Image 1 (cartoon, rainbow, N blue to C red):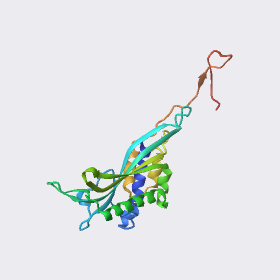
Image 2 (cartoon, rainbow, N blue to C red):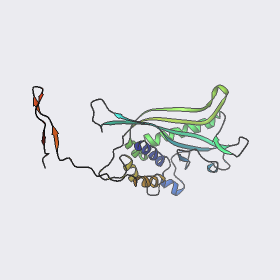
Image 3 (cartoon, rainbow, N blue to C red):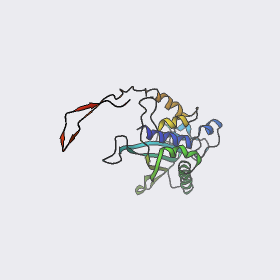
Length: 241
C-alpha cells in the first residue's frame, strides 16, 4: 500500500529536512542527519570521538485497507498502518570480528534521558510542528504509540534503543487511472517534496511505472423493470448525452 510508504517518506523529510542536509545545520532532532530509511546505521556513519551517536531509523510495518462497513461502496475504504521509528544511541561494537554499529549496552541514566528527549522531538515534529502539516495530511489519526525498549531485563541486559510503534489511521490509495502517475496521497507527497530530496528522487523513478490506463466509456445499460415482483422482459436504455 503506497499510502503507508508515503507516511514513512514524509516522516523522513520532516525529521531530516532537505534544506538542513544541504546547509549542514538546522536539524530538528538530536539525531541530526542520522535519520535513515528502513535500515540501521553503518559503522562509517558513527560520529568520531563521541560517546555515542543518536540515530533514528524509520520503517513501514503492517498495513491494512478494508471497507468502512458492509453497505459501503468499493472505494469507501479505511486504511491503517504501523510506523516504527527506532531511536538508539549507536556505538562501535566488536564481537570478535570486524567492528559494527550497535546500540550502546548498559543502563545509563543520561542515555535514557537523551533517548526520551529524542522520542519527544520526533512526536512533536510529526504531531504538532508546522513542518509536520503535510504528514498530518496523510495521517487521519494517531491511534496509539507504544514505546518498546530493547534488551532482556531478566538477564540484566539492556540497550539504549527504543522503538516508537505508531498505530496510524491513514488515507487509502486512490489510483488515477485516466491520467496515470502515482496514486494519491503519495502523489501529493511527491509534489511537496524539495527537488533535491532523497524521497523525491525515489518517487520520480516509481511514477514512471504508473502509466495511464484507457477505459471503455459506458454507452449502454441493461436491466429488468417489473411490478408485483414479476420482472418484465429485459430491456436496454442508452444513457443521455
